[in-house]
Image: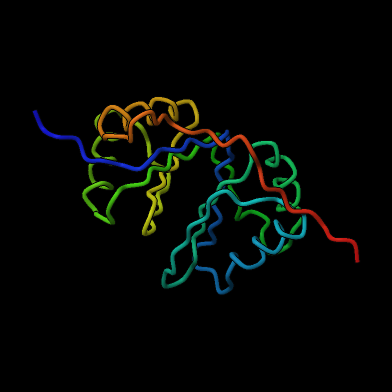
Length: 172
């Protein structure tokens, strides 16, 4: 039997709304006005990733599901963003914390999700974490598959955050 690779923990998000911002062949960037609009209306970004392409800068991000209707209305009213912001469904983020910064963990997780037909909408890595954006109705299954495939510390179980950080305006 093959020994399981060890991870330090696993976290599952609450329901999120997946947003793609993309203007093909744009001569202007949408990342800055999009982030500025969310900040002005105190909408938290749970996940964001982007890349620089030759003629555009596509953005994928997740916000709390409860904020989706507000952000839809705001982006439709915004001259620069109108028509370039697309809401792509309910998702969740499964994040795990490998012991070592090793691409093997990411590859194994991607293979696991692929074998089980769990669509990965986006992913991000850092020194301490690997995060995968998956359909929310498959989030629990994605977490279970990781728990079965990797070695968690003793007495550890997937963690759901029970607190939220929210932006508040300071009195001037």
